[in-house]
Amino acid sequence: MHQVQTILEAKNYIVSKTNANPMIGLVLGSGLGSLADDIENPVTIPYSDIPHFAKSGAVGHANEMVIGELKGKTVVAMKGRFHYYEGFSLDEVTFPVRVLKALGVETLILTNACGAVNTSFQPGDLMLITDHINLVGTNPLTGPNNSELGTRFPDSSQIYNLELRNLALETAKEQNMTLQQGVYAWWSGPAYETPAEIRMIRTLGADAVGMSTVPEAMVAIHSSMKVLGISCLTNMASGILDQPLSHNEVIDVAGRVRSKFIELVKGVLEKI
Image (cartoon, rainbow, N blue to C red; front, side, top):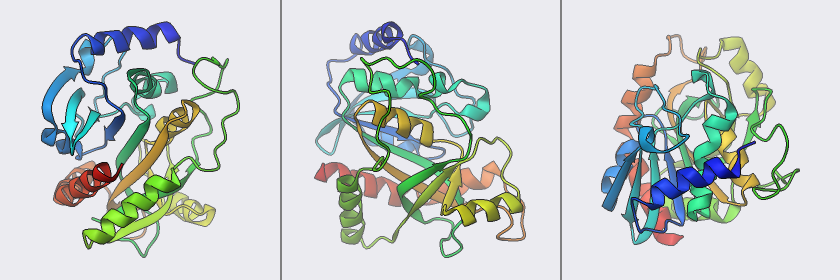
């Protein structure tokens, strides 16, 4: 569990760089960081400057925080995240969420690039996360609970806020955009799943699979934040098509649907 002191040290450093008071946080996944380029009056802070922040080596992650205005809302965007597969502890993976909460963030929009398990989906679709399955066998809330940060046993019956999901569906309809809905499964990585594992994941009820998001969502709920999750489906999961998977494909497809993704998030921000 995170120490309040380290959270405050990170928060105080960020506050020393900006007078903004962000209420909405954005975590931008692989290839999706360009949304932060539209932030007005931006203050950009490299992760390496923030006390106790880790540094992601994942391709497509810029490793910087951008604070400013987007669609009339004060936001803080994370261009890149930390992954369990990189060898970070789940405390390190989720530390930024604790810091965002300390900065005043009440609504967290989590995004990712991931693989489609549901065979009715196709690469380039966006999927609203309705629920998740933790397949990694560990939990970021394991260990002593700090009641200053959240309750010992947080309710997980609606991690992905229904009101925010409805706003996203309404926005997609206005934009004539197909927005899929489904369950996201968290896989540790870094190797992609085997075809047999994908069959198992589909049987368990997941529609997409990826290597992030779930730990952050769990800590956000522990922190009493509202969570919206949006996945960019960059490829069909292993074994669905007779072709190998590559991270280059993930980045490429995420880049192609970037404008659609950006318009959806901006439309949701206008409604919050």
